[in-house]
Image (cartoon, rainbow, N blue to C red; front, side):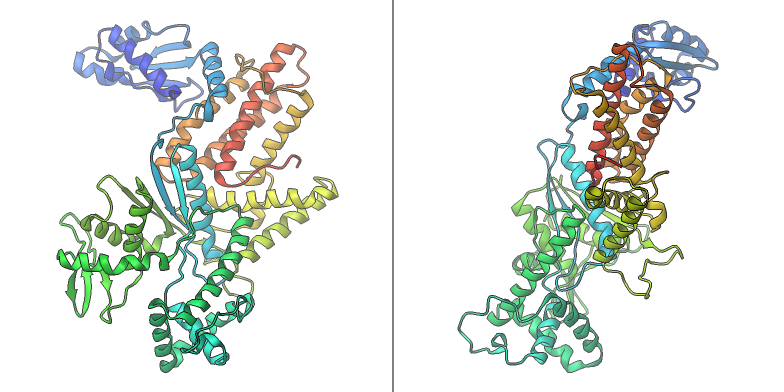
Length: 583
């Protein structure tokens, strides 16, 4: 389905041609003066230079060629603007087509294309903390948006499961429980099905080992050796690693499920490791990797660079791989497994140089196809009210599970205090509102910007918040429920100015989704639905929807708010939350 602006522009271009002027001057834009008109064309101002006549002369001639059935107002005004208002019939027909079309008529621009979205990125054996929040919910929202726009989407958590932290855990565990069969190099039997540690013990082992590494050089050396032996396939160490993976992934899945964040692929650095040797040898053989102070690097600087871009380190001087090596090998794996048209990475913006180096190395080596798009969305920091990175009251990094629980407790207290729902509905309603408050509070900010985490503001039922959007949806649901069966009702011509404003806002849905996709910016979805919710509530306050005596007009009101509800619910689904039945 064509965007409404494209349809109007095509009509304007035809009018320019019919009036004897070049059609390229007929571009139409949304008016920046909604008090005067809904759309405008300034092409006569530019055309005047080419045709050497007054702009108003051209504007007047063009205006006379436009079909009066499409516009309720066509006005040529000095010095040469063409102001437009759509006719009620045109708007009615367009919205009815939206209502009856798949995905509200949004063009599936990604049809036939595949995208891998790399988000999450947690390290196993370590609890998820608030630093994992933005990657998870921005990545999930973008993945859902790409899927809505027709892409085959693959969300990959990209676990940190193969580095030194594994060697540290193994070494610390051996010091604590040296009698375990995992450490007997001559053991040939089956290893226990149950791990030799609880999740709480595992989460305590890693920080203890990490601290010991800094003070005990011999311990650090043993940890490096254990990491190497794990990666070379030592049976006992692989068995411990499998215990760690199973336990960590189960816990991560539980917490991500609470955030309604889901991954199609649970691959990690370990899965990319087998691709590294051949990749490194190929880069060396083709002269793309060169020795540098004992290490091997891939020069990626370009003549057009305005600032220095250092070489990407492929192997350290001791021959070990680093994150860049693994990320490059992961691209090799993804091209073989998925052959994606795009790879999208979500991380802290401080990693922007890292990804610039990796992307350039991948292009230079031909690891990705020429037409494969690579994009890094670097996000800002979640700060406390003091403007510094968000901490617990004790000053430490807050676990993600605790953050979710605190938001849920905060919202539950408001739900109970205001008696929003019956006692048996409190928990389900609280969970939906809390998730909306948390996700919308983050996603309504531009991803690259830092923002202040303010629970009071995020959970407010007024203002640009998730609960306000939910409340608008629930209000519409209540009206529709009292009306009865409404899904079959057709869109009618607007009955008043508020109805027309709401209809115009609805027509912006498709362009808003395309813009959010183009800019990798879920905040633009938030901006759209906040705007749409405002028009819904204005229409509600100004129009006696259910008290309307004319049944035909009433049916038109209901069809209109029903379409608005469906679009609002589609948008919040893209953002990763849903609305309760009551609020």
